[in-house]
Image (cartoon, rainbow, N blue to C red; front, side):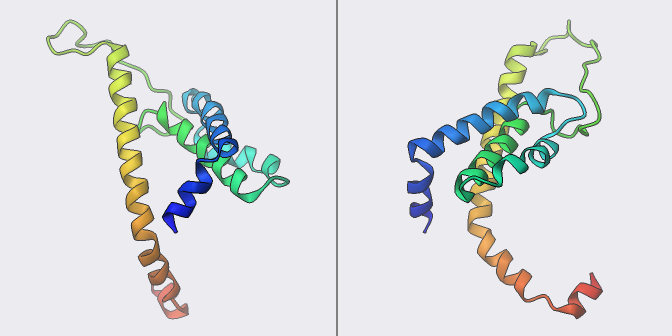
Length: 139
């Protein structure tokens, strides 16, 4: 089942749509006040008339592209800014390598979390289907 999904994803048209989504989502992650979730909400209507697989791949690319450049832990309404303190201290990392390290860490953590979600999703779905009205009331 997973191999079938990989076979579909690696078709050239779908790879192009994923690249296009990441290309559109990367500037979204830089804008203060506009996050990937807002970008997906704004771009859902153009995907209504397309193939469901291509729409989901494009929206996933937008979401991931928006998260690559975001500073994690900062609300989308706040603008990340440095304090300027400590630039002359030993061990200070300049902006370029620091952004590269942050982007690499974000990619690695995102990849591990998606793989973990792929393997835990059936168990979570089974647990969610076991909920009835008494359990919803207790939540």
